[in-house]
Length: 216
Ligand code: GRF
Figure 1 (spheres, rainbow, N blue to C red):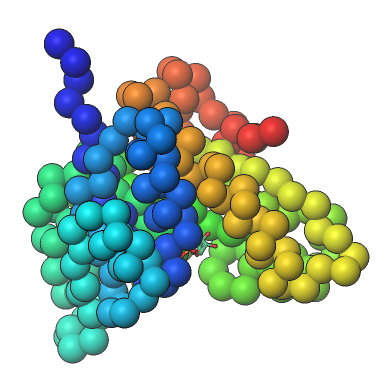
Figure 2: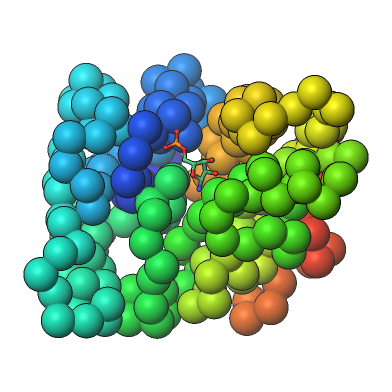
């Protein structure tokens, strides 16, 4: 009997180019999964249009008007759970999440971050890499834990930092790698090849190193 297709939920706040890469992968067949829903904390963003064009149900859950971060996270968790997801992907979701959201989803919640973690968690990663004189930058996909941009690292892809780079030119180079890496890691998960314990990610029953596996 064929295994049921995995159900993905994707959380966005903006342009959704990573969402698009995952949509494209499900369409081309390189990622055998259904995107059950796309949630955004911001209305009117391009990512929502991308989802609608692909016929994916969308939901906007603005973060304003909640008494606490935890209250919002409880509402967000309930919204996500309605889709009964196998895997939840943060794709440019610009909110710090509390354990209220993260703990129940631990092990099936992924994030993509535009730096070679543990370097440069948080914002302005590309400018920080340039300012530090780094010769390479990149992207990390990791399981999400309660700490910001932390949690077991699955994979990274690297790009050179060129002397002429601005934050924008470097971001564009990194994004190309983001669009390769995120659908690939989602595929590993959907194929049942990827899991994590409290500290580490495992691929094909092999413990991955601290920095995850490196994409050539
Ligand atoms: C990406 O750089 C991602 O790594 C970061 O936010 C950005 C989202 O871009 N977390 P997009 O919305 O997928 O185009």
